[in-house]
Length: 397
Image 1 (cartoon, rainbow, N blue to C red):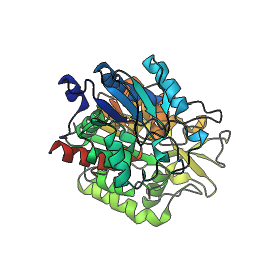
Image 2: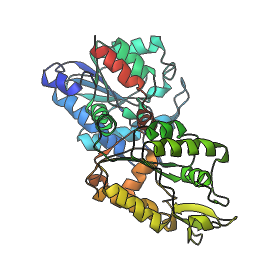
Image 3: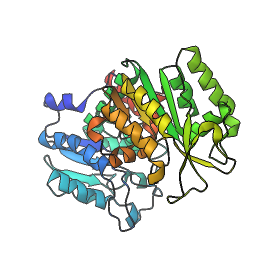
């Protein structure tokens, strides 16, 4: 994808002494005490910030955190916990600056964290007035927040329109490269795992992937709707009966191309949705009226694992069962270990997927772990994300 890359600007000496504004994705989960519980996104933002500091730039970093009300700053919306963690990772003090829209005092070789960008009035609606003010703060705008690349907001899109230079940071560039490698020219067979509670939220992705992939593994509540479409009983499992025809259409589209949506042959059921509910393995045809399907069964998991081990490219979005409950985690674990053991190029994204990868300790064995949830899905769907679109426009001049 033709965009200006920040690494190239640094290599050409164009960042020295310049004011660099980095839009990072530091939207991390916090506990009730305001402590970060999972810091992947903070760690992922460090290479871009270090690159700018080593180049001798005056560095400003900002992000959203949670869902603050525009124009009303509350202490729980503060990026202060992120600044502390960033300071530890960078080995230097990272001051937090509030009320920064009209000017920031930062010298070359320094870094500041600009307070929660979503507190600024006009951020979500991509206000031109706010966008121009943000653009006036910098000489170079660096978009390094893939997790927000599907939104056109003042700090992700508007600023890129008006900044003197707009470019992709190393994280955003790596996402572009990984997704292009997985979908534009994939090594075959290309297998996609799309799992989650609802078909409705992923229907367009399923339809779009049905034209591209050689195998489409469905899991979670989505699989239950596909089980219904295949004529199997699902008891009182989570499903969307009104979307059975859509599921059938996806199955037929795949079949017409000689590809398949493997329907589970066995499942793990329980009578209640609870961590301590007794788990029973059943053939897919034997699900009782009061059963809840909470995972794929061992036979299904083994069949799917064989497919994954033989794949050329794997795209993974979502666990295939209620993996948070030990008794219903084995399907997801089997597939996770198969992906880790496969020689395929694998790309994984989405919050629950990242949690599964962390749970089974396979970070090193996944080809690329995407930091975006919604953005990752929209790229899979074949959409051009607003962030990519504006950076491409700027690269063309």
